[in-house]
Image 1 (tube, rainbow, N blue to C red):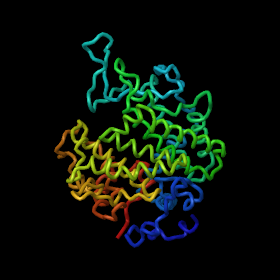
Image 2 (image 1 turned 30 degrees about the vertical axis):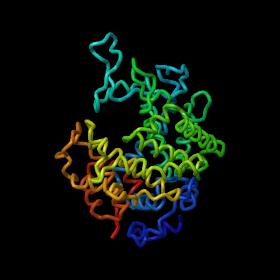
Image 3 (image 1 turned 135 degrees about the vertical axis):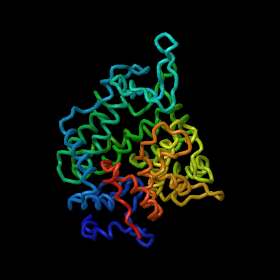
Image 4 (image 1 turned 60 degrees about the vertical axis):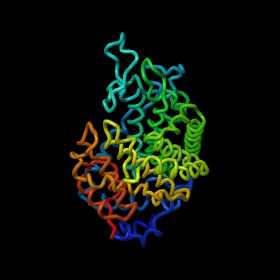
Length: 419
């Protein structure tokens, strides 16, 4: 890390092909620890975080909105009561409040039926009831966001209070016998009057990716004891087992749209954190033909996402997961970034498919209920620029930089600055 900090900012930002070999290496379940002073991250690159930290310390105006948002959230989290699954007002069908429970986001009471049951689906229209304390998804979201903000604030300031609070939130949610979540999603995205839990609920766990990276970021602080770290790894290892063996997990794995791709991303990430390198390698090796070759058309479109009422959102949402999976593949020697079928199906083709719509999202040809959302486009183009050392993607990302200035993404992935 001392060498990285001492290196000039220009050298840190260099992303040319000649510099690729100098990039830090993610080494299996050890992640970036060797290049990151013991911080065992898998998606958060030490060179990128070093760059943004240096820029924040220098008062770089472009990063101040993102840094202010993270620090404001972290400061507020210092005084917040920890979140837990056991305080929800409803009880899952299992009878155990330690089981996570959520409601499908697009399901609504049927006005023609007594009591509204069974619920009916309205694709793309969120039922606000899912966010109440009857369920756990709001607490899961807030816990993961707080843990991430605290971990980043600790990294950027060195203030141990942030790491200690993150550790407290982690112990309450995952480890303390009275409050811990059981490592399963048997009751995720339930539908009242229909089913007490669905395979689609597995995707709720995407919020835990922030947790995994945050644990690594605060690891050298000592806020988490060795027994805490072991307990967290065991928890995620149990979740991996549940994902691989439960009927709900197996059904989600069989999904052929964004859910299947997210399944691969989540189980790979959690497996690496749990020390299950073979699982991560097997999943990423199969993802090339099982996901990329089947979910991306030769023109780069994602046909299963284009049928949705929020087709632009789901295209970028799915591609973001694919990018994460490609980054995780690097940890186990699998190159998904360069994978391409004979007829052109690839991650690069998918990014190229979106590229002509940059700055023209209002003209998007497919159905999209909310064309004001640009977060997904911003992240895809920002990361695509780095992935293929392509300035044109950076130029497209820049179109959305002002609208997304407060995103924590800006602290984790600096603007591309290659040749």
